[in-house]
Image (tube, rainbow, N blue to C red; front, side):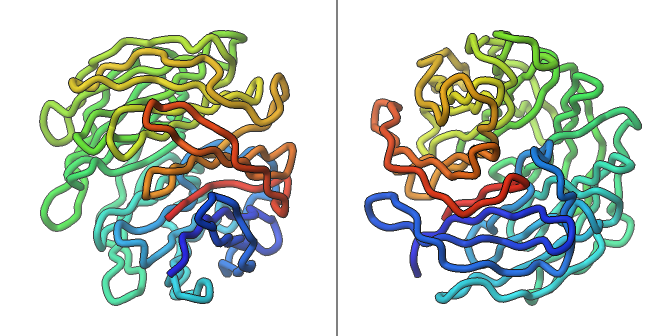
Length: 339
């Protein structure tokens, strides 16, 4: 099966997934558009990370429909996507989804909280009694599992905090245990394979204040700080992606169209590598979601305002080199998943 790349249109009338095939040199060719059966918000700049994700084995694609309050499941097939199921998200305005094995959790932003689902037998089934509330003013940005699946993490922009849940053997989340973020407005994040967590900090959009910090899992559901807030000198940082070898993290700075890079130490500590490792339109707002291909060779990012996807090769030293710009996405585009 070809290497793939997926985004959602977030269209208010008919949400769709746009699928691309990725060639050996990292270039993207549009494969097709696939209806989710739900609706997006129709508003540019969906304020979340991971609104669309692939399962661990790459066999399933999950998509949030923020406008209609639903979660969609697609089967990934050789010639595209096959709609498998669409189900109510357990709340309103779902904006982020996490998956581990046959378990998924959706982050609902209307009344902030999370709800669990089973993916067994290629259909979505809500886990009765799995809903967990967040604080009313949480304004959550992202949900994701730790690599071992025993912890769920949610960033809360509104309270400047990070919540962690312990996941039991039945898939139910206990908690949360909430800690203060090292910096203001924690947003997107990604785990390294060893379980270190790198979190971006937007500092309320303050010019030049974008930063990132890192945390360790002391035990399931319990985060402890490693590196305090380290600024990248840019503005409105939002999304984070770590390399498969756990050596580098890339963050997108919406405010000025740049990507900054951080080096990750063996203990999970981070240090700024390049304030501007790459850019889409330098000095222009618009860069948003990003993802690294599963073979670790390519980084892709959406510039929603330019209505393009940009790609770079990822060097062994963490340096980025452009591979191209690819059209065909609307201004409302959201989410990004890469196989």
